[in-house]
Amino acid sequence: MDETFGYTFREVLAEKAQLPPATHRLIVGLGNPGAAYDLTRHNVGFMALDALAERLGVSVRRKAFNALAAEASIGQNKLILLKPQQYMNRSGHAVATAAGYYKIPAQDIIVVLDDMALPTGQIRLRAKGSAGGHNGLKDIIARLGTDAFARLRIGIGQADGGDASDYVLSRFDPQQRSAIEQAVSRCVEALLCWVEHDIETAMNHFNSKADANGQNDPNTNRGDTPRNKTEQNP
Image 1 (cartoon, rainbow, N blue to C red):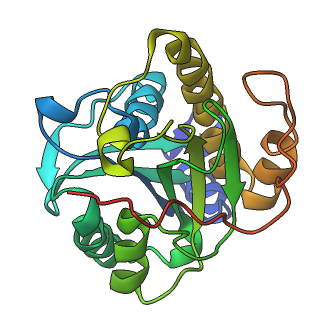
Image 2: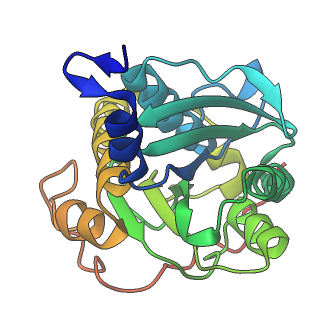
């Protein structure tokens, strides 16, 4: 009998044919591999991606594309979660390889990274733009051949004197941890909004929110901010 719960198989197939095709989205968290860099300021992109993976019920541990990867789904969106494992300033190889393998265009990629130009705990989404002095983002732009992909920046604050590279490779002060934990939680919501809607919706909703100290970012609607040019990413 050609029926299933009152529907013929032909009707089921016809209904499936009307569904929009599955869309692959690539979500990249930037950081440096290895236990020595765990929970450092430069690895806040890894932290956000791990939090998203936990929310989606997956673990980013499969080795592929010179990265750690995981797959998840939200509706018709097939998500590729990626943590490049070739150090920050060589992040582009993993991103470009994964994007090429899954045939993901730049507009369906978002990169989560740290930003010294934002106060600790502030987040900012942008649809595209320059590297702003971030070596990991610079390498991704070079490898993809375009800067027309979304990015989600997480503020780690400015170094209070001393070398910028030492600062980004150090861990957060106890008083900063709460702000970063809250920022990571907001990043998860922002990423889900980007997946389910689009970058403009996510920007309108999350860029207008106050930062962890209750102060609005005066540069919310401006372009990517330049970082300290002395920063060196291993």
